[in-house]
Length: 122
Image (cartoon, rainbow, N blue to C red; front, side, top):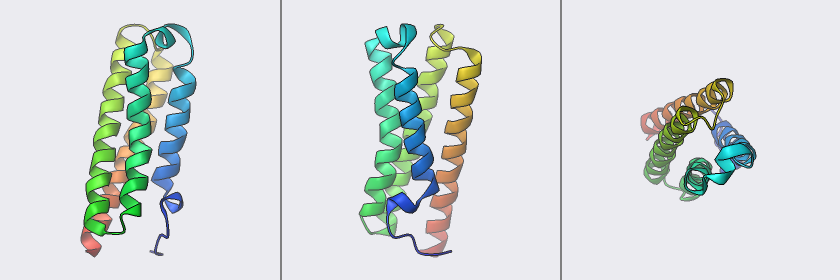
């Protein structure tokens, strides 16, 4: 496995970035746009996933990187939970929910694999 120079080399960061952008776009419309609390929390959680990947990588220390990857993984779980709420109160169509849920599950799995890989190398 080649050495990664920065967080922008990570596929999980790119997927998390796309997820954050998609979350912002989705939350700009309909009833979700009017529910400031849920809308803002969705956005913060989505941003937290990508931000913690970046911050952890920039720390330059494998144990710190793993710690921040775990925070990113937890933020992904938080985001998924918030999307469940948005679906159940009628802000989100089932198809949209399933699309976001799939993206979040995939990112979480990527983070888990990266954490495992870093721990094995350290």
